[in-house]
Image (cartoon, rainbow, N blue to C red; front, side, top):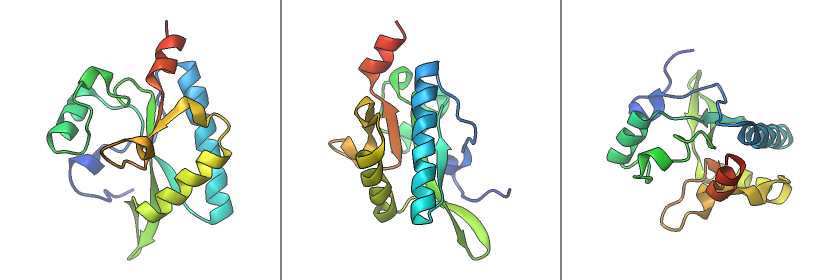
Length: 148
């Protein structure tokens, strides 16, 4: 597939779902199955955008204001306990990733009402100073407790 977005933030899409441990993999794969249910019900095309992230990429994203977790080693994506979603949309005969707040809010609300493990997640919709609706992560205290 052709490169669909310019710039560092979009260039590192990973299609593999790579997580730190079996609990995180289970929860995120289950979440992904619910996102697919949502897609089927509402005729949308949300897919995982990014899961694990190298430290140097996290540092660059913080530097350009695309991530807010300055403690690089503790960033949820670096710890491989997070996933971001974006939607594939056909525009001008090309498939592109989009993050449209209106559609992301609908997905977020639907997941909040239907995903059975919602309380184990911290989402970009929960952040106090910024909205990052595509973002879902295992709460750090749960992740640490499991990985002791």
